[in-house]
Amino acid sequence: MNPFNLLINYVIANSRASFYNVPGNQEITNTALLTGMVSENPLMSYLIIDNKAKIEGEKTIVPVVTQTPTGTGATQGLQAPGISATGAEDPKNTNETPKGTSTGETAPVNVVTLENVKTEISDSTKALKEEIAKISENNKVELQKIIAETFNPKIEGLEKSNTALNTAIIEIKGRLDEISKSTPAPAPDKIVPNKDVSIQKEITKNGPK
View 1 (cartoon, rainbow, N blue to C red):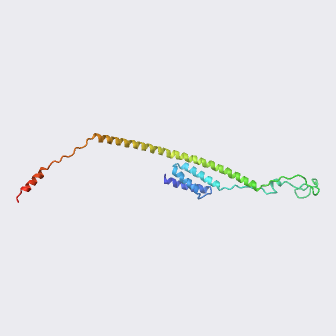
View 2 (spheres, rainbow, N blue to C red):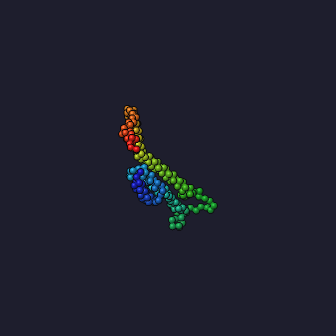
View 3 (cartoon, helix red, strand yellow):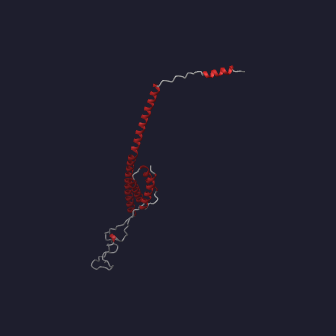
């Protein structure tokens, strides 16, 4: 883990969060720090952080539904029979209906109800969640790939080093055992009386009193 990579990823996270209008987003910062710990590839780290910032930015987008006002659009061209566009009665198309009777025809009206709005929002939210799930799954696969490419060779190298070290230790122990078996034990030292000390003692005893 390189602290310099963590600092670079933190700066990238703040930059991309500001770009997608989600400054200070903790999820983006956490992703940047995690990527800095497991990856030493700056391009891969940038792509992962940018993708996470894009996802967080899309979460804040509210779908806009345009409602068509009644009386416009499809209903704008519907006019009462016998009345022209200026509001004056058209003598050619005057079909008077007796009072108390109905024509039996209904004009189609395009009305946006609250249920339609709710359904459209639900569909948009569901589609957005599915897209986010796909992106998250892709990020998970990429992260696992990075971890496998980065850490697995190091772990295998450590295991090989430990195996070689254990083999060397066993070999050294075997050689030490062979050396200890082939070397005879040293004989105990013989105590040789010091003649000069005995003579000195006799002279001291026989000296003038």
